[in-house]
Length: 547
Ligand SMILES: *[C@@H]1O[C@H](CO)[C@@H](O)[C@H](O)[C@H]1NC(C)=O
Ligand SMILES: *[C@@H]1O[C@H](CO)[C@@H](O)[C@H](O)[C@H]1NC(C)=O
Ligand SMILES: *[C@@H]1O[C@H](CO)[C@@H](O)[C@H](O)[C@H]1NC(C)=O
Ligand SMILES: *[C@@H]1O[C@H](CO)[C@@H](O)[C@H](O)[C@H]1NC(C)=O
Ligand SMILES: *[C@@H]1O[C@H](CO)[C@@H](O)[C@H](O)[C@H]1NC(C)=O
Ligand SMILES: *[C@@H]1O[C@H](CO)[C@@H](O)[C@H](O)[C@H]1NC(C)=O
Ligand SMILES: *[C@@H]1O[C@H](CO)[C@@H](O)[C@H](O)[C@H]1NC(C)=O
Image 1 (spheres, rainbow, N blue to C red):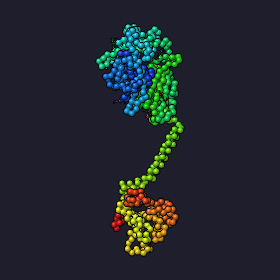
Image 2: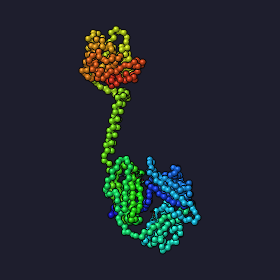
Image 3: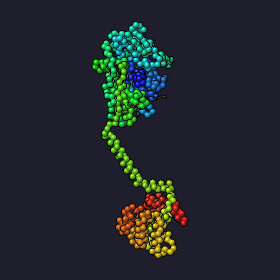
């Protein structure tokens, strides 16, 4: 019962919103000098509608005052002029987008004395039967408070009210019309706007159907009930619903699309559009076809209930339709594209990381200053060993180890270094003592910096200390080795096995000619690399220093 009440209400609503014969394109005829109000075939609640001259693309002003202006869904000609014949375009828009344009063509007939109303009329026909006829005054709904002055048949004024004619509001009722009552009927009404009175005439053809067939229930030819339509996400889709509504013109004829039980045109979404058309086929079989156009199929549409309802005076039938994703390659294509994109992103990240790793790590240390108070029992951040110059001549390596290195790492960056030869304590005079003492220091360091020069290949004293240090560094793997190649050594062939092993594993940081120009610049690639390999500075090293 409730359902029937509900449907009845909807039928009433559907009827009160007439479904024009052709929605996308409509025609209007007018006499020169009359008022004309033209309606945009499409409408949506709370949307703006803009009008253009189709030929010139010029917008039509949306304020009153001009002879031609627009007001929401309506385009006004107050009054018409001959040159207004042509087509007009309207768009229904929200903030971001508009529906497909609709066009309205307007024909203005020049006023000629002696010729009453133009015969090339495009308003749809009205049909009656031999028992009753009803003619609706076309377009009068577009004019507020218009009053019908007179009805004409084939240019002759009708005398009424009479036995035969009854005029009520926008209707002309004809009692038992014989075939001779067929013809062109014109309603002539006046309309007031802004203090001016305008005349309007609208004509349509009336046809009397001789055979009366008993009404039958509407039949939806397609889609079949509960059918499934294959769609692709993001693509447009048209779903057509064709219904047989009876023999001959029907008094009630509606074919509509509903989405989730709401009329598609009434939805607050511009993605759905409905175009509805009525036509006859052989045998005066009367059909309605309604096409639901979904601009872009979205995920939510797969969950929505679509239904086509066909209605005539016998009642309604409804067919449900579900949308389903097209199975197959597209999903896989998206997946493959997704994976490829992911791989490219990962590759880019790896490359970026490779190139900027050092800078990123140094920046992070700079920003977050992760002074971990870590008690690892170490005293030095790094111990430096280098080949001693036997001739005691001042050379660059000595200068580097005793001036540049401490200045950059100790003074500028707060590391604590032990440098062979600098941090010797008294009593460590002998070679063996010195070697042992230095080995102890290396064990108390977090890093072992080894300066590589070609001298290394000949220097015996160095080789000895070096070997011990390396041995320890390699055994106790918590000491990392940093190799600084101060002069190009070539293929490293003459170096000891253990050193070559480390070089092979981690490479060396090379001092280049360009670094000599500003050796103290701690932002050079050389020093960045060194700092990168140095440990995070520890607070505890400060205390150890003091102790
Ligand atoms: C249209 O706007 C009015 C007032 O702004 C609001 O009450 C109404 O719900 C809106 N209608 C729709 C369909 O959004
Ligand atoms: C109106 O009726 C005439 C005569 O039957 C027909 O030729 C014409 O196509 C009809 N027009 C419309 C719009 O149905
Ligand atoms: C139409 O008529 C109604 C009721 O008589 C009135 O309230 C309204 O203002 C009229 N509208 C115009 C545009 O004259
Ligand atoms: C409207 O029609 C009446 C009678 O037919 C005529 O007197 C009047 O001048 C017409 N008005 C306009 C604006 O054409
Ligand atoms: C859907 O129909 C409209 C006209 O009604 C047409 O312009 C459009 O190309 C059609 N789209 C598809 C996907 O068939
Ligand atoms: C869709 O239809 C099914 C079956 O008729 C119903 O259970 C469900 O509530 C409907 N969903 C919506 C959103 O109307
Ligand atoms: C219809 O209902 C379903 C289920 O509630 C929802 O996911 C979908 O968004 C609704 N569709 C529309 C157009 O509102």
